[in-house]
Length: 627
Image (cartoon, rainbow, N blue to C red):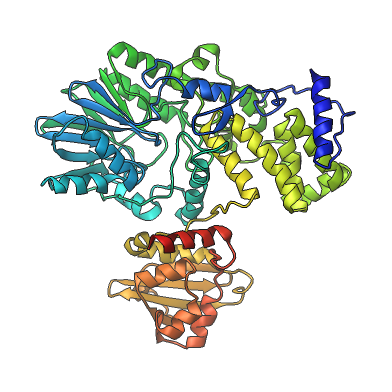
């Protein structure tokens, strides 16, 4: 079999104009990976043309009510119990409806206005009862609410509460749900989320997305008007609801679990339809497995008879619920404990990726399928939370810049042509991880169509073999980017968010200072947006201090600017040049010299290049078409 593959590899390499190093035997793969020695991985095609592994297709083709399936992934209305429904969809989220004596309680509304419209349509195939409340499980699936509220208004119902964790509104205003410890970089978090959730993949064809998708779409978020606290009980639609907001941490800051004693029902964002994603590769806060496990214990202690979850299929019956909770809890315990044991045995993050493997009992549990996130990065994330990126190997304490490393590695392997041959050979043998590592060196040193194609080929091979849809989307998105698809690396700020959190967005601007150009500068820019919004940016030798109350600052501004939130959003997104805005009066100079004001604003570097960034040009064209 190996000889056959080497022969085929040689023929293919000749056709591609390269030389297959058929004389080079592949070193044995001591630590198996689905992306090494994978040329003969069984592959197939889904109905939409998506090229996938046989394991992906086997799950995807299960009927929605199969006990081997833990998520719906298609439009479906499930009657879970009397007056309790789950609305499933191809989106990443379920919506749940519980009917009380006075109407419906809705749990989550979707990822977009379009999502909300679909869920509302599904709801009306099940019940005609009026909606009395929409509850947000957390800040992620809040953007379909406007569709529910507008549709209900047409029916004469305007009495709908929006219930959520007390932190939801602030989080949405600041990051639009893309939480990061430093909100200044939430635009990068949003951009990474787009790469993770199929936003750049087609709907049909070999690279198509088919599960866990989030697309750029209209936002129908409506703010929480009824914030609740941990342990609070509130009568909604004639039912007593008990809310939990503390110690139920999973993937976000503003969690809200609901217990309905009269129905013995728990509504939650804790039990997902796949292995608990302790690390999301898009980034975010550390997801402590102990807190997630504790949240499972909180559910179990309630002894629910109905389990309604944001991402997983719904269950009715204590035995089925207890079994699902037990497997989910054990998976979290196993992941944490085996990672910690590996650390005690001297393993670093890269070794842990390979050593932590689920036992057969958990491997076979439907609720623990790894078709959302890969298990490999999760132990490495736990390691990083404990020790940071340094793996304890002193040779890794300081590293070459990636560009210098690539240059030297290519030189050590005989030059770019020799490395390109190794990439072709590795790809033909199915050693895609190795091929991509080498191809990445090539693109860094010799970025042209041929080297990009080599890297795209191995990325696409891994993406189409990935069981985890997050991994599939990352691999295929970047393969397509190498072939010309524009991909955003930083998302522009929402003007509405800038207006509602203006002080924050003045503060965030400080990080754009050029330390070289401002090294000898000590100047204060004053910014007035109204009688109660008077801020400052104090430039001091390469750093900038944000002054939240300039009126009480012990120094007068060297230049004072008056403007509006809308104009600041244009400046923040680099849609307008500060000097031109000063000349036009959009940045109105109240005190100081105009040339000095222009010079000070020129000390800040632009982030968004609307003239040269293909992704921003594509976004601008899309926005212009929408208008």
